[in-house]
Length: 128
Image 1 (cartoon, one colour):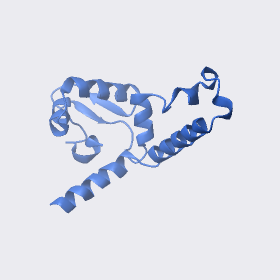
Image 2 (cartoon, rainbow, N blue to C red):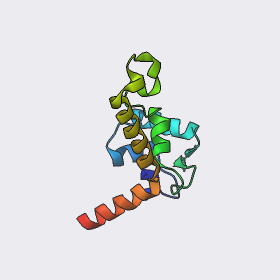
Image 3 (cartoon, rainbow, N blue to C red):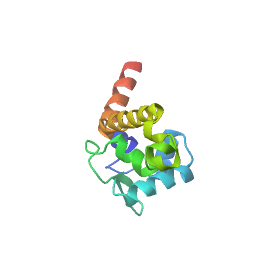
Image 4 (spheres, rainbow, N blue to C red):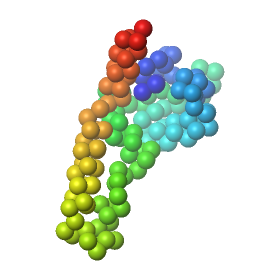
């Protein structure tokens, strides 16, 4: 989202993003490189280098970013591996967890990075 908010010529350095977000460059670097590996970002070397969006922020969902960085969205083990629990077949709690996961994924899939950027702009505009 930060890259779609205030990049300079479409690029921002790790240092600039880390400063803006108040996180360590090492931590941020690991995230940015993972997103680059998956094609969401591109990187440029040299004096005018940095990271830029590799995909249109209007087409990147929060669910896609979450899945890349966090993996599957299973909240409890028995949803993914029902065979590990003797009670999973008729378990109401497991059904609830499955429904929660579905809702969670659907909500994340309904929000794009551009949506987040717009929310950020609106929030900061009101606070000014």
